[in-house]
View 1 (tube, rainbow, N blue to C red):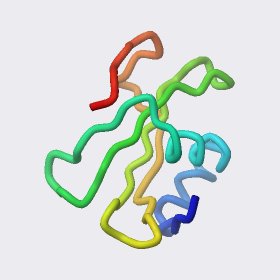
View 2: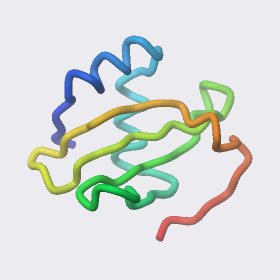
View 3: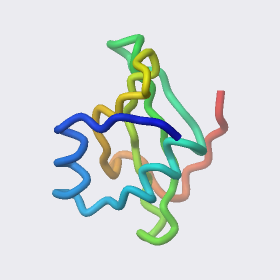
Length: 88
């Protein structure tokens, strides 16, 4: 998948010890996604990372940009690993 990492997203991966493989997995095949409540160009893609205690990884991407622009990446503490949601 073709994408561009913003400097913030690149720094977030390193600081938060998130692998590119995990980010790319959720970017390509999220378990569910949400529209950003403020910016209509942004989509939040979420999924559990089994290798990291099933914590939920949130990848925020600008879907209007080409290539896709990754804005930030983080483990969402508000989401529980056992939550089930379906994709819209």
